[in-house]
Length: 68
Image 1 (spheres, rainbow, N blue to C red):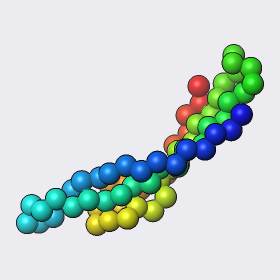
Image 2 (image 1 turned 90 degrees about the vertical axis):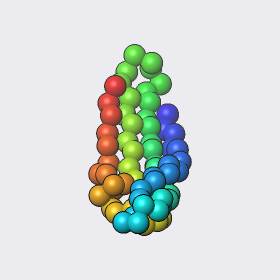
Image 3 (image 1 turned 45 degrees about the vertical axis):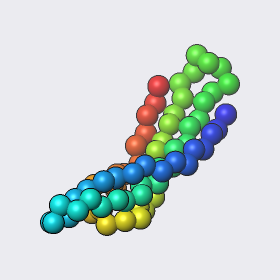
């Protein structure tokens, strides 16, 4: 079974004057599960481009795979 989830996180940073800035960070996750519950599953999440002033290093992460 494969599921795909799209979500959005908020990232708050401050500029030089101390003003709070908001960046919208989308998150895409795909998960593959075997029909047999005793088999491992794979979850892969990644961040598509964010919208806002936060520097890329704060939100850009390579794809993260989790096998359990």
